[in-house]
Amino acid sequence: MELKNQTAVITGAGKGIGRAIAEALAAEGVHLGLIARTASDLESLKSELSEKYGVNVFVHAADVSARADIEAAIHTLHEQLGAIDILINNAGIGSFGKLVEMDPDEWEQIIRVNLMGAYYATRAALPFMIEQNGGNILNVASTAGERGFATGSAYCASKAGLIAMGEAVMQEVRKSNIRVVTLNPSTVNTELASNNNLPIGDEDRMMQAEDVADLAVSTLKLPTRVFVKSAGIWTTNPQ
Ligand SMILES: NC(=O)c1ccc[n+]([C@@H]2O[C@H](COP(=O)([O-])OP(=O)(O)OC[C@H]3O[C@@H](n4cnc5c(N)ncnc54)[C@H](OP(=O)(O)O)[C@@H]3O)[C@@H](O)[C@H]2O)c1
Image (cartoon, rainbow, N blue to C red):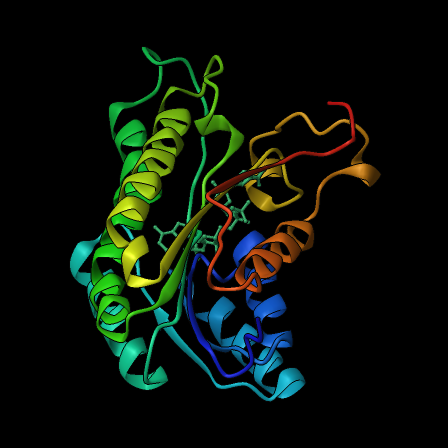
């Protein structure tokens, strides 16, 4: 399916996987609304993508964990873009530590950003999709949501919650021609991984943000009669 002239809002678009998805969608001719907290990241991506691909790019600095912030961002971007055909719930943070040792504020913040943030953004964008009787929501969860590991209680819980929320909302909206897709990457070469010293195996064979973006675009290009409910993305690189 042709994506040209569709519109997409991407959270966490300033860096890493979100940035790579923004570029991959711009290359398909998709007009973009970009969200992250750091305005300078969004502004530089906006100039780069609008110049290189000739698409409209709007930006809105917002924290997905603050409901009023993210609702305002989604509503403003909807007005600027004229529609939201695609919502990419990608914004996420990760830090790791034993359950009893991690500061409860840090534990809760991971849930607030990774799970509540996706809920707030979905809740704000979904009525537009229901009204237009079509759309795509793509959640970037993680293999950490499929299987717990020591020191990952907050991160694994946030991603398991996102996977479950995605499946539940998918059942609510599939009859409105809205597809909800959840991608579950294992370790990807981004700041989130390097800041946490995640195990990476051979650095030159690590999965790249662009690989996840390629899969995101491929799933969105499937005929609207089908969708990928969830996909694990692994590397052949032994870790
Ligand atoms: N890297 C991996 O190994 C890996 C594996 C599986 C899944 N994932 C998931 O993939 C997603 C993207 O991760 P990444 O590796 O690309 O991370 P990254 O390079 O650290 O980029 C994260 C992006 O999200 C934004 N962000 C963080 N907190 C935010 C908030 N509260 N509100 C709005 N934006 C926020 C960041 O910008 P600001 O700081 O400016 O807001 C940044 O643009 C996350 O959901 C992550 O859990 C990553």
